[in-house]
Image (tube, rainbow, N blue to C red; front, side, top):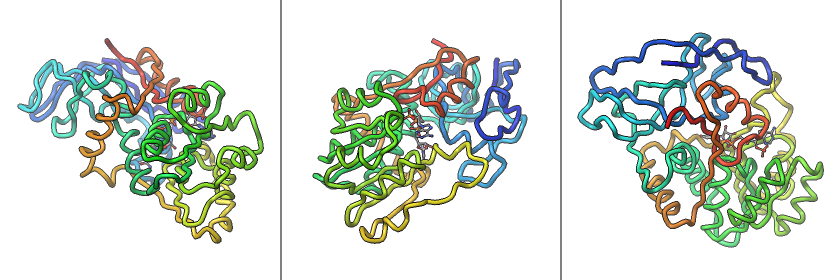
Length: 332
Ligand code: NDP
């Protein structure tokens, strides 16, 4: 059984030095546990926070820890009466060929609704984050303008589509023409801004959001957020989901720099954590699953092949290699 371990805390931009692949025995499940053959592994931006020796909402990894993350896999051996071998499940496992999971902490996967990798993206934690973050924190109303940063990623692509389903005008920021084309041509966004092709985000927003911004779903922070703050309408809501532009910073950046812009619109800025909605995950999964089944909600995954390439897949999140959800395929 191959497993990835945390080898070294990175400073600034991480590289492959932080990861070490080791070989060991396939573990034995204890009472209440499942041995799962991993098919797909999720790599996520929040894992950068776990590499830091600092207080955060996700517990830091210690050097020498096995790396953990969302997985979809097949039960090989069950020590629980809830699942039997052959069942497909998703839960929090390890970056490994085989992983032990507590039966109480996994959910079944229905491959009729969508292919397995979707359960790590649109039908998994990122989709639920988009669902609750947009609807509960953003509170979009029909006719309002919703702007989302990191729009072509796992969370952002769901935010924009759910906002469209709620009758909003939707504008996304993403880092390539291929991504902005996908947003407008396939996902129904009204406009999308390639932030790597312009320095003047404010002017781009003047065109894309001529009536101003009512809801801003922020996955990114930095200069994109500065620009959106200058366009907020009266009673605007800002949902702060992520700040990936700052995850590799060693110094705390100055700012937020545009706070004066919140005064006249009486804007509300609220952080959100998906874990807070744990008792309502069923509701989100059901609605997202329905929308995927009817084709109203599209999903896309970028698949890197092979456990040995998992660190590269993770590092690619910071250079925007992924369209939709980044996953790693571990086995057939
Ligand atoms: P994504 O699939 O969106 O992948 C990350 C994307 O971020 C990249 O594809 C890249 O796209 C973009 N990006 C990277 N660096 C920068 C930068 N410097 N400036 C602007 N964009 C950048 O990841 P997720 O959908 O999984 O997560 C999105 C955000 O939501 C993250 O910040 C994450 O931490 C946060 N999150 C928060 C949760 C919560 O409970 N609060 C739960 C889940 C996620 P591009 O090509 O456009 O640059």
